[in-house]
Length: 74
Image 1 (cartoon, rainbow, N blue to C red):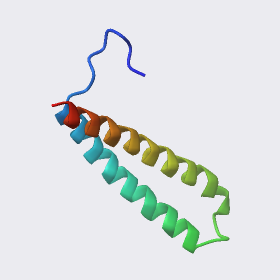
Image 2: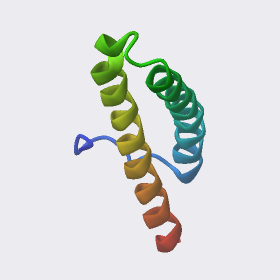
Image 3: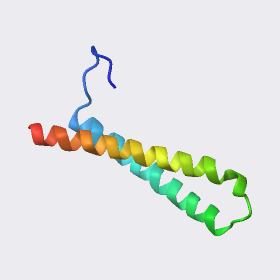
Image 4: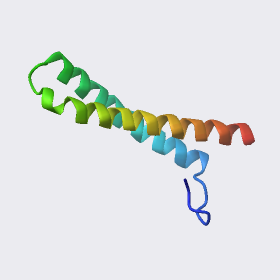
């Protein structure tokens, strides 16, 4: 939640953040896929990578909702 004195991000800032996160999310998804294909090798890394992948997609979802709301307001 933004601090009361912070200005909310602009549409362009959100689009830039989304673009960067989409790239990182795609890489994590491929890494998770590769790890899953190699199971049971490196199974110790599965939970950490799955958690990181989940978190980035959750953040992307939040940013996309913020962008949608900004676009509806204008």
